[in-house]
Image (cartoon, rainbow, N blue to C red; front, top):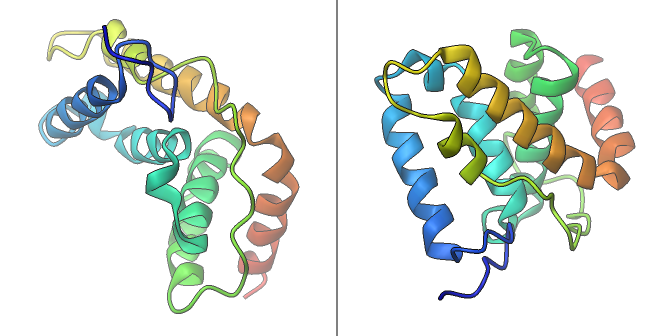
Length: 155
């Protein structure tokens, strides 16, 4: 038996969650039920796996991506401004990553079913549930994300 993933805690081990992530990512290119939540999948996965958020900019990109998706209805203008705001050198230090990053993992998305004939909303609900669980563990950074959004929306 493998040891739990150091990032998300999935009991099947770190390689298993990466394999699930890779499979879902590949499917997202052809399956609209996954394509419409693909960015949220990537952002949430990265927030649960610290090697993907080593730099201040990658941390901000994924924190802001989840915030935009969950709290701002994926506002296209905001998403565009996030990308513009992150262009160039980082203007801030990377905050600390929470030790515990959520009880729900990417395995819950796989359990919801990722076959082409699965109800798209079922998969989207599983992704949003996973993202909300992960976002809750970043509560110490919600005010910072909101401040950054305020700054970029004033530009």
